[in-house]
Every structure is written in structure tokens, then in C-alpha cells.
Length: 522
Image 1 (spheres, rainbow, N blue to C red):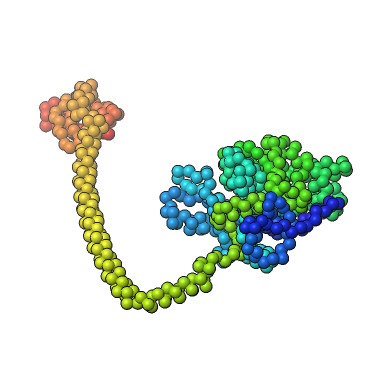
Image 2 (tube, rainbow, N blue to C red):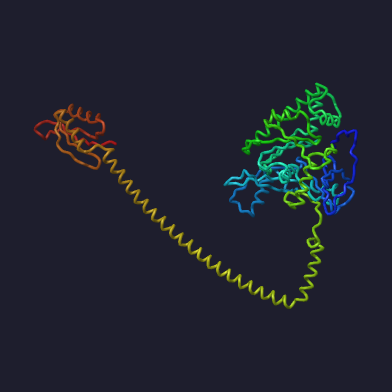
């Protein structure tokens, strides 16, 4: 447990009586095991000896380390009645929660939501902590009226108009075994992060650097009294080294958070369970780039008399004052609430049922008639609703059938059009091949005639068969016939097919004949 050395002049504990009709706020810090009362603008030490006093309001908080946090996106198309289920499922997935454990899950919609998605800050607490870890408090007080989350305590500063609601503020707080930072934008929670550098971690680092195993409570007293500037220069150097490392680490966290949320910090508030640490301001200014503001909020006229009163105690008092006005239990984690008024308790409901039963017995005939009449009217109403819905169902089925017929007809029309399109495409392809891919037959005749004349040959006849032209050719010698055929074969665009060369002996003039088939190439 964190303890500071007491001042030489101790504050005398006294029991403060609240004004008649007013409520005494009792803050319970289970981390430091400190309990304070607040009434009539004065603070006093409180001994938990009473059980559930009617005019006392008991409040405590959950340390940040007991809270799991995540950010969940839910599509705006998700129906409102399914949002909670969507958040719960995604939270279990993101945090790998054991489905066999019992968790209390709360959420808060972020201002970073856009047109497509809602963004929620989700907070998860294991219900075993709420019950077992707080039960020893309830054993003394009987009830716990409010259990807050540590990062939500700062909200009271804006609700009570202590801080303006038009800035971006960062609160950094160190405890013995816990540390966290939380950011508020325009008076609303925006984001928070756990910090590994708690007070005990700082003590460990100091001992490691100095080699001096100083008692941990002596270290806290030295840090609270002297800050980072110790009479021992070596101690100062070691502390400066540790705090430089701390605020470099915090700077990295804030750089990431501000970048993700697209914000810039206006104010930084820093404090610890041992109070402000002198000399830390320079690190905040240099490493975080923001002038620090005092994390020292005063609400009691005698507050300075209590050195063991922490800022979290003050924030609990402010939170309780706000709750007593607005009675908002949305983020109240208490499992030890006071029983509701008699009418809302089981015994009260039982009494109500008994009275109602008596009235029902006395009015049984009227009830039977009224109940029968009600059932008859209800049946008639349901029959009318059924007829209307059945009629609507048939109308929709008919419309769907008509749409299916239209779809089938359109498919047939598309198939017919595709067939016509294919036929036309094939025709155009054939026309193109005729006009472009093959030489014109007139050109083939012209070329053949020229080649025959060059060999002093004679064109006897031309036959047109399919894609081919067959020329009957006659030359005076076999050599000229051979050269003619060779010339034709070497001409681009033609294939020559001749099976034999004949000598025409029936003619008085000796000549050689051949049928030359010319195929036009592609």
C-alpha cells in the first residue's frame, strides 16, 4: 500500500455531521485504502463503521488496470436493436474474451463516427472483480452507491463547469501499481491508454540506476517533497533519466492517439497519488510540446489540511455530486446498490399481487365477461389482419410470377437477337475475307496472262472452280513450260497445281500443254 510520511503536525480526525436533509459523500479508494467524507464544503477522514446510513452516499472506482478497452466499428445499416449484439460479438473477438467468464460490457459512441460506420469505445470489466474485490467494502458500508471507471472520473470536471468544454485535454495519472492517460474532447471522453510507468516501476528503475535499495515509501516521500531536484546530484541525474524515458514513451503514445483521432492537445494535466512531482513540468513541455496545467482541483475549504487526499478522491466527490443531481446509472458499475423502494422490491410486488388478486376475486364475473369480450375483439382484429396480409401475400406472389414471365421473355428475345447478331457477324467476316484476304480473280488473270506472254506461251482456256482458277496453257518447248510454271510458283499470292505436261502430237505444230490450277492464298 502506498503511504507518505506524515507531517509533524497531524490533522486530527474528526467526524463531520452533515446538515439536516443533506447527504454526506463518502469516497473509498481501495488502492490506497483511504476513506474520506465530504459534507458542507469540508473534507474529513471517515471511519467505515456504519452500515448503509441513509444520508451517506458511498462511491469508489475501478482502477484502469482492471478495465479492458477496445474500439469497435458497426455499420450504420445494422438495425438499432442489433447494435448491442454486434458490439458484444466484436468485443469478444477483439479482446479474445473467454465466453465462460462473466463480463460487464459498456460502450460509448465516438465523435469519430462517419456516414458509413458508427465507432464505439467499449469498456469491459470482469464481474468477478465487481463482486469479490469490492465485497469487503460492502461488508463495512452494506451498500456501494456508485462505482466509477477511473478514466471517467474526469467527466465531472466538465459537468460541474470546472473546466471549459471546448478544448482537447489530456490527463496523465500515476498510481503505485497503475498509470494511465485519458483524453477528453469538448467535454466528452475520446480515448485512453494504459501506461507501464507506475510509481512502483519508477522506484524499480531508480534503484536499478542508483544501486541503492532505498525503501519504497522513503522514495515516495523524497519524490513528493523534493521532486526531481534532490540534494544528491546523482539521485537527481537518475530521476531525470527515468522521467526523460517516461515522457518519451508518453510522447509516442500521444503522437499515435492524436494522429488516429486527428486532434491536437490544448492542455495536459499531470498528477500522482503522491501529489505533483516538481520538475516534471519541463519534461511535459519539452517532450509533449504543451505547457502543463496544474492537476490540482479544490472543492473543500480545508482541503490543504489533508496531504493524503488525492485528486482521484476529489474527482470521486465531484462525480458523486453530479450523480445526486442527475441519477444517471449508465456507467455505474456497482453490484451492491441500495434496494429500490418497497413498490419495486419483490416483497412489495408480492403485496401488490395479493391486493390485485383480492380485487380480481371480488370482480371475477366482470373480469370473465371483460376478458371474453377482449379475446373476441382480439380474435376479430387478428382475422382482419390475417385477411389483409394474405391478400398482400397473394398480390406479391402474382407480381413475382409476372416478373419471372417478363424475365423469361426477355431471355428468349436476347437469345434470338444474339443468333441474328452471330449470323450477321459471320456474313461480315466472310465478306471481309472475300474482299481483303483474297486477291481479285481479275488481277489473277491479268498476272497469269503477263507471265504466259513472257514465255511466248498461249492461253487456251480459263476455268473457274470454287476458290481456284484453272488455266489451259500451251508453249512451244518443254523448257518454256517449266520456266512458266516456276515463275508462277515464285509469284506471291499463288499456288500452282499441275499434274503433268503433255506434248500435243495431234496438232501439226508441236507444242506442250498443261492445265495450271491457281489457288488464291490468304
